[in-house]
Amino acid sequence: MTLVKVCSVDELTPGEALRVELAEVDVAIVQVADEFFAIEDVCSHADFPLSDGGVKGCTIECDLHGSRFDLRSGKPLGPPATAPVPTYAVTVTDGHVYIELEN
Image (cartoon, rainbow, N blue to C red):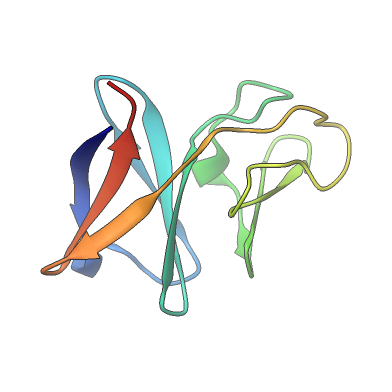
């Protein structure tokens, strides 16, 4: 596993998703209270950026068709999506957000 710096904590607005484009994958970074989550920034149903949708608690909703995903597991919480979206472990150190990517 490799830790990749994705943003600073100051760039995040709690309850909103921040799209971060990496060479390996695009991710949505979300702060909910004092927790941080990283989820691949694509709806498994419609190939649409999840970061364009809304965040409510630990869920993110695709703005295109309304599929909701659990930020902790990536699992869909109802149709139309049926496949999960990859999530990534997050570490916050010295005011910066890092995610773990496989080598």
